[in-house]
Structures are given as structure tokens and as C-alpha cells.
Image (cartoon, rainbow, N blue to C red; front, side, top):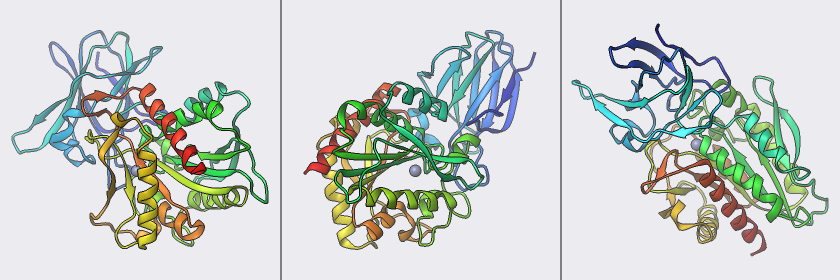
Length: 378
Ligand SMILES: [Zn+2]
């Protein structure tokens, strides 16, 4: 009996799927679906009809997935049996084809008739609901508008603040790029730690957990689709409805606190292994913007566990872009609120040989929150 491969569930993504039954194993060949975008990387498939034979999973478009290619040996996708928990694969083989292309190959030994296989630990609204249920009474969840496709877009608030403002303010955004799930696991650590670490009367903490909710649910990678992704649409006026919604929320927050910092949580290219790092504004931006962002990044970096962070913690992008430098969140926040915004890229799989678990992402999130609170009091 042939294997069945499905992607028709929240967060599912793959295309060009082929299956084959070899004498000693089953094979699933698939590509990460760009879903109309420029970049591809996120995938999540469900394999059914397993008989206990090993299943070889082959990502056929590795060379055209962001940051993958020949360097993808360090990637460590995750798998989960129906009632079980996610586990990392322990090995990635990069196979070079006669024409010079590369495929990434993983082997899973199924312990049940079906299992899921994804590029990194998925994080959906049900994961957030579980976390909120473990923080009773602390977070207020409310819709702040709707997505471009009409789904309620929610934020979390630890308090509502006052006018005139008394508390210092931190505002956090995750999943502007829908497939960048490490950002969600770092945010999960922030949300869980806040109950112990943040007095809502002193620090007003608001968060948008799924900025590109449509893409999260539909399984998009969500980076650089045409005409522009969320983090290129922060122009005035904005170019996407979610950005308009979050801008309104950001200004409500800013009136109700003394705004200190905005934090934007992302995942980098597939094979990043040197550690998490902060993006600095491009050289074309005002010097004060670059300097304030660098100072905030260095302040935060000194307070984070060293094993998580790149030795050179701030990176100033100079690679070609087809977007205006004024169209990213950091530029909008500086130009309208006069405060820095930190974009943190957290790797998908490992840092200097250490494979990352969900608990480790949460530990980074908790440490980040302590550092952010220290920044508001400095
Ligand atoms: Zn990103």
C-alpha cells in the first residue's frame, strides 16, 4: 500500500509530492511550497499508511530554500506521531545530484501508522491557548482588528495602562514572517515568564503573537511574497491591512505608557548556526536611528546567556533589497515614536553544535524579557 501525504491542516505546506515503495523502505519526495512568494523554506506534511518500514523524506528544492543548499546539513526538522510529542531528527544528509543540485534527506522510523514532519517546531493558536491557560489571570487577549482575509487579529496585554502614562512600555511582535516559528517559541518563553517577572503597574507589556495569522494558518513561509510581506509594508500609509491594525494598536499602547522598546521576533536563513542576532537599520537610515538601535541591542545582549547569541550580535544588512528602507517596522517605530525597535533572529535548529529544544527557546525568551525590563528601568 502506498503512503498518503497530506497538507490539508492548519500550517501544512508542501508541493510536488511523490511517493515510492522501495524493497526496504518507503520514500516521500516533496518541495517547500513558495505559495506565490519569492522565498520558500517552511514545510509541514502528514504521512499516513506507514507499515513500520523506514520512511525516507527528501526535500527536492533545497537549493532554492532560503539559506539551505549544501550547508543544510545542520538543519534538524521535527517529527511527531499521532498522540506523541515532537522530536528532532538526529541527522541530515545532503545529496548532490549529477547536475550539481542538492537534495536534503532524512529518515524516520515510524512507530505508528502516521506521523507529521515539519521544518521546525510548529506553533499555532492552539499552542498559544495552552500557554495562556497556564498563566491564569495575567494576560488579556482581545481582537484589535482583522487580517486581510477577515480573521480576527488578536493582541495580548498584561494591563491596559493609563493616560497620562505611568508604566514603562514594551511591545512585542512575532510571525511577521509566518513560517518563522522560532520567534513564537521565544515569545512563548516571554509570555510564561512575565507572570513572575513583570509587574503590570510598572511595565505595560503588549504582544501580537501572530502578525501574519493568515499565513500561519495557511502554511505560508510568508517571506518576500509579491507584492510585499508584512515587514516591508510599514510605509505611511501602510501597504497591508495587518500592518494598519498593528500600527493603530501600537499608538494606543504608546499613549498609555512611556514607550521604551519594540521587539520583533524572527527566524533567519535555514542553516544559521552561529547564534541569535539583532538586525541594525540599513546605512541609509538616520545615524541616530542606527546608534539607538545598536545601543539597545548591546544593552540586551550583555544580559542574555552567551550560548544563545552570536559573537557579533548586531548585523547591518547591506544586501540588495527591492523595498524602501522606510518600510520596515523598525523605521516606522523610530520615525513615529522615536524609540528603537529590535529585530531578533533565532535559529531553527542549532547553535554552535547544540540542538535547540522548545524549552531552550523559552529560556531565551525569559532571559530576553528580564533584559527588556532592565532596559526600561535604565
Ligand atoms: Zn523574518
